[in-house]
Image (cartoon, rainbow, N blue to C red; front, side):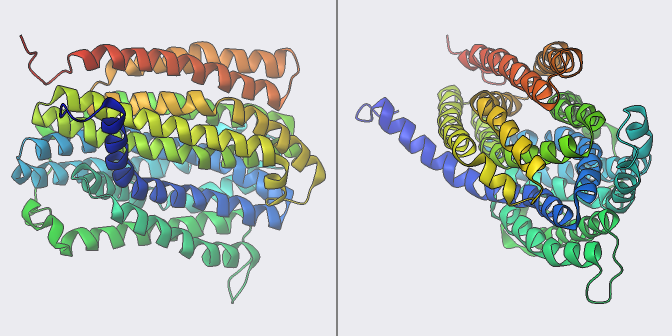
Length: 456
């Protein structure tokens, strides 16, 4: 830092750099989340039962998304550190092995999603909801391999600090889903009326379009020409895949720990009937949209921290994190304010059912209460990923979400008969504990970042 530059000035500069990198990521994430919103809105207009079915199907599908995001999140720090060390020639070979990993994960998860009805039965989801949820899962399962490859393409691009394609592909997918989903759900323009199943098939079609579009862009854009991404065919090689899994599996478990808390919450609420399920889906949609901002900032911070580690610049690690925390906190304060002031009105955009609207408005007050801690835990996790620190954060996440948050939620919801509000209280508790533990972990490591020789 220049002597003439004050700390506030440096922080503002760092926030601008992080913001420029994060904005397309956030836009892409919002577009991807917007696909869930589009599914929910179309389903809600089709009827409360369709909305409840899509809600339960989305809960199971979210497990697939979480596993893919978590495991493949190993790609950005590996790529960013190679980029920071000026070893770009090695990125192509790493990418091809990551693509093999993504393809296998996608195929395995496609098969598992088609068995999602078993999970709905075990969790005791309302009987009238299950057929539509299973139909939705069968349709969307065809998109699992495409989604896996899309994440691999996206994380490669973000690792070299080029995030615009994430935004472009996300927006394109969102725009395509609206007419395709509406046509297949309601039976327009010669298509059959498939309801929840139609929304599943429509989402799968869009996912394949996004994956193929991103692959074509990577193959033809000059920005990636020196990486040699598709210059030759490489068979699977265990050593690089093992290295990716060594970092990616703990990351995947950590992301799964948090996301599955929300999934389990949805499945527990699934025992409470159609109104509770529909209201929960609306509130979760809104909260998830708000979460895309700190998540996108966290992903940008992963890249910036990884690049700083690769360059051997310990102060840059700390400044990159500080800028990310600042942006995330500001964003979450804004989102909490919107939820408190306009929660009921937002719910009316999804459905005209007065009971669903009233309960959704109440749940959005609970969502507002965990906005700040949710942003902090997301940022801490992103900064730790940049350091390739995965195992301890995984354990901390497990304690926070499953040893604290879930038991509290189940006890309040079913034991004290608080209903959906009890499960959302458990979310607040679990996320708060995670925010404290993960931020303390990063602060300790940032003093002497791993991968950077300590200065005597």
